[in-house]
Image (cartoon, rainbow, N blue to C red; front, side):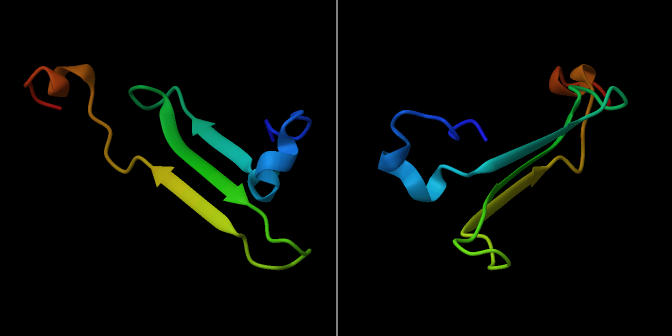
Length: 70
């Protein structure tokens, strides 16, 4: 929660408790597998105000970027 103690928190209070989860692995090229963000609901147990998930389903090695075979 990078904004938890931000001195300007009152300007973006609704997003201030945004949580970030990043999954990395040495077993895939580039190491990044998933980024997940969540803005919790206003009350305990309520649905999130906003949620985003970016997951890499296909990861090709650097040779693929250069036009070679993955």
